[in-house]
Length: 287
Image (cartoon, rainbow, N blue to C red; front, side, top):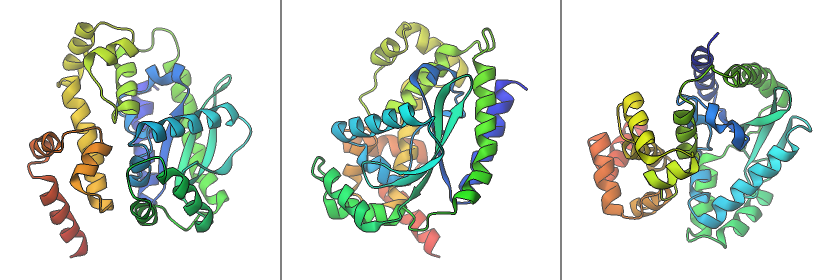
């Protein structure tokens, strides 16, 4: 089976898990980012609106990254339920080939609301979003029902096997002819809330800007900036539906410092303004 086939199977299976209200994220060590197929890249970052709100600021983004690194260093210990620095809990499932290469995170839950709120209080001190607004987003988007661990294991073990097979296949020399593109997509997906430019992307991926631009346009049919905007607007849609954040706050969270630019890009991609999108879809959901 090819990496493309495996990526298709993994994507379909994660979509099935999402239909069961399980939020799945694939976290790999940096040296494996380049093998991430573009279809899998959307699963490499937590997209829960609470997580997006927390990670919208440099200091809290750094804390989230440090938390992930600590988990990567200890992921080989066992499958377990953990709580992150922001009060969100999730199950950790290590991924192995000949060594620990990453983990699958399944969330998002809380078992002790008071403990989670204390964590949120600590996080709120370092960002501009009010603590009450952050608490509200947490309660709207994080489940109080932690599923039975045996049930989760039954569902996630097949995904672990598929991911480990994908990693082994993708790491065979000569199997992939788009390593640079995979590396670019993985970098963009993991840093899309930052100030991304063709220059800093190419520097991070050790390739010239002209080469990356040409490869990306040829393979994806759009420029890197267009791809980034699509990712950001997808996150914005999620935030518009699942939070009560002001549109200017959502613009900041997804990486657009200019709210007018954000509105123009959103309308270009979706055909309607952010405000219209929120009203239209919330009305449809409540009908």
